[in-house]
Image (cartoon, rainbow, N blue to C red; front, side):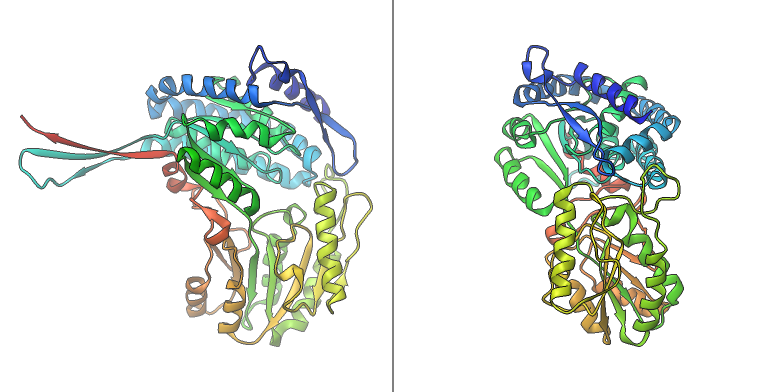
Length: 483
């Protein structure tokens, strides 16, 4: 069934979003299931000509979409939300086949993705302006908000549905048009979502998807064209910096959600069982392939042994296997490069004195055993780089001030977590951690109506809630002198 859906979405992708006279749109590239190595389907391989054609359509569609009321746009978004939920199983199976996410997580992601559409269908009506007290009796001062314009959106492979709606829903609600380039590892989910947008009555040129195996060539026309007024990107910090520089050529509005290196601080007053549950929730979701995964787990020395014992049992109990099985909790890594990075981090740590209490081995295929490392110390790559895999390193600490300093000792600042029952410490440490998202006794803080984003090398801007809508709105000041 999932293969049939993928092939259907391929045909849909080839029939829209590309320049009719351009031969580039006849090419396709295969999407590979990382769990089995089988071909899931094929996606149209867009080129620069297709990108230029998509820009023309997005720019032409913008005035008409902008002219619709927020209520009219909201009606279409709600119908899109309904169709996403109606097709939950099909979308979930397609995601699991494309990038290996366990099916139970994929179903949850579909609901999460629909949540953004639901929120912005209503939030678009609340793009309020202001009446400013006047400094002169014969003047009236107003500040209004209007859509930025045509948007270029680039999404990652690890959340093929939610990353699409988290960007596209607020942009559409604000009155912008969007051309989306999904990651080449998992583009078919985005194509299916675009097809459901059209089925919901959404104009095809208002939301377009360009799938490609050559992202640089497709992206270049968007950065060169000043009519594309906004870039929104989720991905690695390295790529984000390059896109940020390219966007400066035409002074685009920019939102960047980049890499993370999240610490999880477990203090001596922790309920150990509850703390382990929260660490497991954030660490092993999506096989550790999320930008907000707990990458560094700092455990107070007084409870380290008990914590490691409890977490070892939890890690051993994780069920690894077929992503389409309802019992699977950990699937494969998305590709060979991802697997090699995880393996190299573990090998480096073990060579420098760390010990794998659980797991530590790669294989078969793109699978890597859920792994718990102890005796992890400074100087190991796993404490300096984002691992993006199912590996949990444990680091001991004794001082609150020292562990906060260690947690902040990174160029990244996306998400951080802590477990404590001390209310004072909860506030004190939350305020001291230099991160955009803090989970206190909560390993899964993200929700559509709250802000999501980081500081430092983890990016700029916010997605979610009213903050996400504001990323797609310009402020216009109007001063009226009365006759």
